[in-house]
Length: 264
Image (cartoon, rainbow, N blue to C red; front, side, top):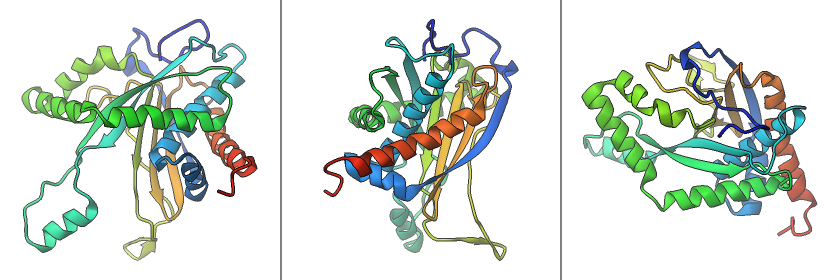
């Protein structure tokens, strides 16, 4: 997000490595997210991004000196899978004895959303997220970012990759990722796992982490587990942001339930 007189969620030209970060967890109902998803004919990822956008808007509205205005633009990166192989394809390849390449394959797509005071219908944020993500899916942006990052890492290493992205990532405020986890309970060493979480919390020289807000989600057993990692100097009330994100989904679900065509 670019700086303006109302909203300041970017690092600017300061020392990124000196930024202190704070982490908290949040659990959302996957069932409620699916209710919104079906209403808008979207994906869970569309709903997830819409929840974050509306949650950030609510957070800024609650801050007396950081009011969202017509020129407030949230700029973020969304991590997307570019592997292409589904889990069934991988299992089939293993059974057939074929060689498969393990490891993550992901790229990024960029979004830019105006946080407007007249855009207070929570469902509109999901529709906007869907519109932006659908448009990006038609491009090769995610594949390009994956390939270029892989080449830079192979030739020059992670530190050079980090320095290459410093200028561009300073202009973004939000980083999100969403992973589909197990739908059935799993056990580890005889102990049933009750919840899951993932986040990036490493020095910028090892892995880029410039954004003021980094929110990662993994689904497990009907729940969406979110990890919110923020720059303390920019997001000074993490629990308030967490509350706003939770309430964003509540408002979306209520909006769907109270709509005239909710029975459709």
